[in-house]
Length: 272
Image (cartoon, rainbow, N blue to C red; front, side):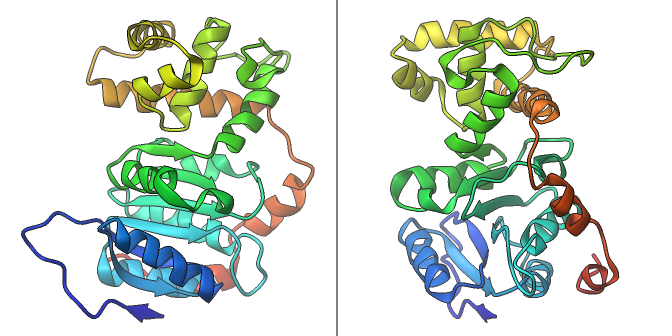
């Protein structure tokens, strides 16, 4: 585990980050990318134990965590990320994965989509990744387009093309009242897109997108409060509904691995 040797300028608001990945070359490259955007890397960890310890010691604004870490390279990183969200809800957690896996989004997201993200490592380049880092550190959310596409495909029976899907007989569909276009807009909100970004993606005017966003809020019966809060609540409704209809061939095996065990519990650091 390595830690920062220089202190940030107190006059400048910076994002303090803990990085956790067992691949040292990737971790170093990621640290350089984040530092180039003004972040301060307060610690780097090679495994879940070091990650938990580093967060307790440094209390960063954001933890960037590889989903699969030593010793088994299964879900140690994800387990640690979930614990961090439970113990430090004020801290952003951005999970990175080499492969697309959505079976355990429930555990990661929990009861709020604030300050959480899930990206494929292929996205860890350039401005899009840095935008996601800033959103998650600022209490927003950022989900990889492929993650959203998989959820939308299982949930909507057609993905971002706007098709309506089954969602499973007998389940209450939270999104049943949304139009195909409103579902597209909500799926892009789950990626963390702004209204302007959604307008560019769907070739609509910003005013039209704003109308769709307001309609989503109304159809989901979200209370009239700050738009940021309602966007987060809308994304959470989307993820809940999508996860219920999404299945994974590896879910059973990973579910057993994800469960708490003595070894995992021993590596936890008690909150003060």
